[in-house]
Length: 151
Image (tube, rainbow, N blue to C red; front, top):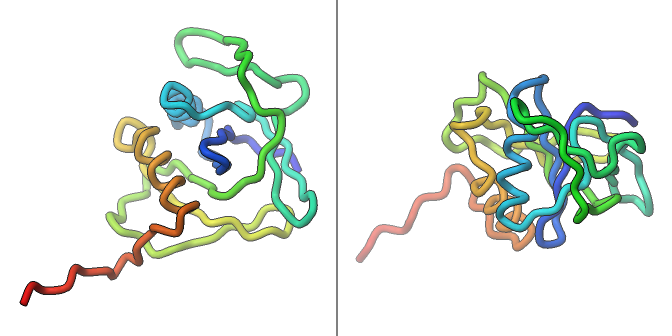
């Protein structure tokens, strides 16, 4: 299944960044790469299901190529050709919830956790990487969580 999106992998977890052209997908991915993530694909992905897991790969003609808006196209040498997708991030100017309820989306018949966030600069790559890591480690608290009152 083709998808207009960018995908990264970080610490064994995969993330797909979605949004309209110019919304900041590649910018966020570039920030994430600077923090240790690796590129799976930029701009055009191919999604598939393998062994019951949703996988993302770069479009064959764009493997290792990343667009840096206003600067040009670059070729990256340290890429991951294919990775499992654990999280979908949708960049949306309408995203304004401080603590949104958990959501999912479907790709190729597979449910994937979904978060909607504002485009950069309101959202940054470090925040998404921290969320992805916490999600993988089971450390996401429910939106209605409150600390216990001190006795």
